[in-house]
Length: 221
Ligand SMILES: N[C@@H](CCC(=O)N[C@@H](CS)C(=O)NCC(=O)O)C(=O)O
Image 1 (tube, rainbow, N blue to C red):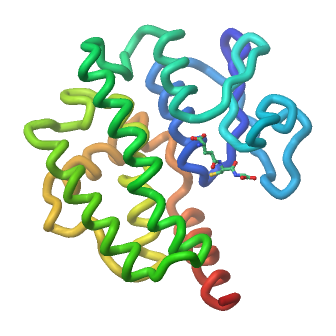
Image 2: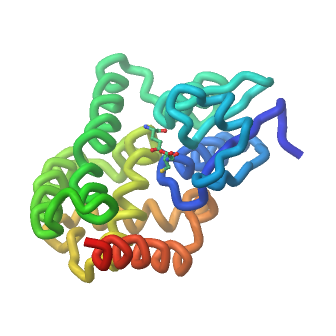
């Protein structure tokens, strides 16, 4: 039974939806999950997120919140145990900076190349490796981006730990190579963490989905 009327509208392979589920699980909050058909969105989703009409949406006590990073901060402020955000104002600003970097810069070349055909795959891999190099430095002296524990940037970087290997499988090329030892260590520790493991979508289904998305785009171009 979901506590305090907590509901998530999501889509099983959406990295943005998975983030919200990870945060709720980290806090131990029980929630109801509503799987959306993105080709035929529910009237609730269209009403709750009438501006962007996207998942995820969190509903808490009858009020809706959209945009995954905003939802993560809401969850952290509402349920105080296992903090996701740092306390120190500078550290907090930096966590927001890197979370924004991952969404606005890191993920874009891969999405453009593999899902929308707007960039050559080789170019996307090259740009991704430049961004991986930047993030490798951020992990200097740390186990997680959040320091000793999983924080905002780790949760947002699920897109790297789980989805980059799916891109790698779809194009049959490696990006997370031994050039990035800290990121590789982080990725292994992160995806094997019991809470994260529980929130990630099923692996075989995810690989098949990515391969099909990529193949569909290849044959239609
Ligand atoms: N910036 C948004 C991105 C959400 C997003 O792009 N969701 C996708 C699924 S991965 C979606 O709902 N797409 C449906 C559509 O655009 O119609 C967030 O962080 O929540």
